[in-house]
Length: 177
Image 1 (spheres, helix red, strand yellow):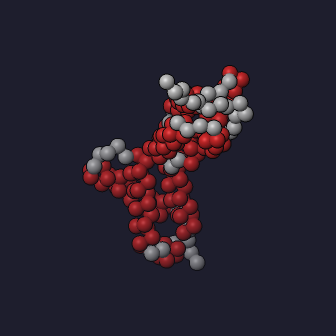
Image 2 (cartoon, rainbow, N blue to C red):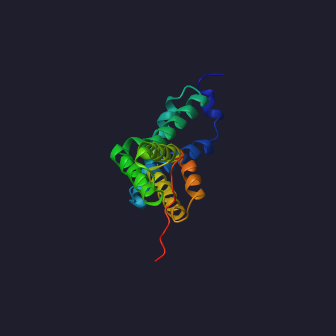
Image 3 (tube, rainbow, N blue to C red):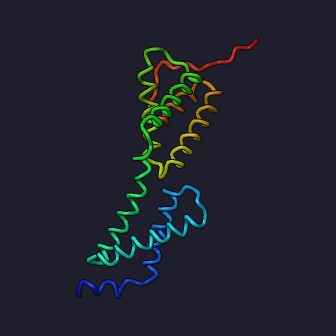
């Protein structure tokens, strides 16, 4: 089978599916809310990339691999654009929330920071976009705030789900007047 035979065997709908996948990823990760005009431009870019990849690929496997690599690189790009200062501010907010709702001794400050860092890293790695990252962090922080209103065992359960535990954590009780 010649190098060009694979193109004749690739159904046209497969190419359209790949263009649609690229368009979706470009729009999802790069969109700035430009509306229909921006979507048309994104579709043109996706179609152009697919056509160049199709023309330059040595085989169907090569074609699919190059398309997949491009889509994966788009998925990872948001991480490189997220400034380290933002991540550090989030870690500081987690530490602050823990300090407010789950008082701990001065000896445990480093452990709490490690827990907060592992918690943020876990969400960072699981997120598929910056908005997904921020949404997941927000939901976890709201959950943490809600659990902080409770006492004792919930404190240890919450810390365990965040990636750590503190031996000397004491729950914060509200005093009756």
